[in-house]
Image (cartoon, rainbow, N blue to C red):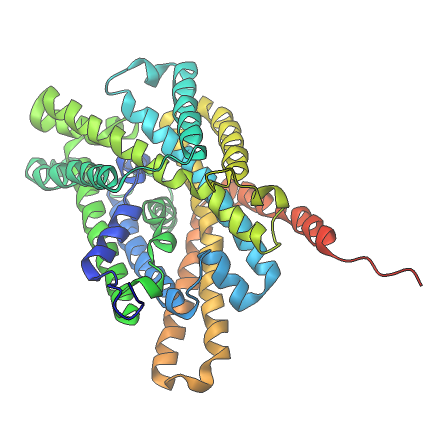
Amino acid sequence: MSASTKKGLGLWICTSLVVGNVIGSGIFLLPASLASYGAISLVGWVFTSIGALLLALVFARLSVLVPRAGGPYAYSREGLGDFAGFLIAWGHWIAVWAGNAAICVAFVSYLTVFFPVLGSSPVASILTGLAALWGLSLVNIRGIHTAGLVQLVTTVLKVLPLIAVSLVGLFYLNPEHFTPVNRSGDSNFSAITACAALTLWAYLGLESATVPADDVENPRVTIPRATILGTLFCALIYILSTVSLMGLIDPDQLATSNAPFADAARLMWGDIGYYAVGLGAVISCFGALNGWMILQGQVPHAAARDGLFPEIFKRVNRNGVPYMGILISSVLITVLMVMNYTRGLVAAFTFIILLATLTSLVPYSFSAIAELMILSKRRGSANTERLLGHSVIAMLGFLYSLWAIAGSGQDTVYWGFLLLMLGLPVYSYVKWQSSTPPADG
């Protein structure tokens, strides 16, 4: 089929890609993490949703300006140079494997619906999480990818429990569960900021959901619209589900729940609802882990291919899979999970998603500034009003990312900064390897 007759992806297909990539495991355990803040967390959701829309607009625009593989890495390298590109590839890679660690925790957490021992035995829970991690690592290394039909089924199964509990739960609300509004003991601003950092985890994936421009019908219109529609749909589901769960379950019980959506379903529909929603969440978490697993290899592989990551990440097996990236990432996930399982499932999930969110916010903030740099380079051929509008959105996206970084907390920023700084010797080593020594005079 020639390029001229090739049919591109339309608005609704692109929108479904956004929703399928954004809704993963995060929302299934987030209500428990937010319960200690109280109803004020809903304000955090609103601010996060606005920030996510700003970032969605930034990435939608960048996907048109820089239609190349690599996401934030490609954008940052284009706008800010090699060093920024490396730093963002490094941070994005950390975000991917830290995020997969959080998905493993959520997967085990919802398995407690069927195997309660996993909620009380750290050994059993860590072994189960590692079994899922390494099992899917081996599957991905062999190149066995989930078929499109299976992906569709897992997407439906991840959305249906959310919609069912969110809508029906509105008829079972207990107003007393929403008071006091702020349960954290901190100021309202501090509580909202902390909640915004937590809830941004549920939106991670915006950068990977934008479809390359050459595969989309009228990309300058379709990609921004699809990204906005998908993000708005996710925002609606997220806020409604949080209201329903907070209104259904006592705040103290919600804060310690290993499977909040399943617990809410039990209150409304008994054991049948409890097990049905629990199974949907388990399948969703497992599917999300499988879907993001390959990124563990692809993100560092893209940078290594450009000479900005160690050459070991360039290696591919006979199936074309960058297996070393998957293996190294899975080892790091194992270490992170073992270090944090003593915190308990909810506490471990909370810490890990904050770390993953922080290391995603750095690429997000760099991408926003990269858009400003790219726009400045091309301002001679751009409409002045449109250029100003895009610049304002990019700057707002940057400021939101900065605010969310502050909300991650000192402990998370401390560890996240150290992980980013560990990349500097790696960059120095890569550049030293690729440089040609001067000839002896």
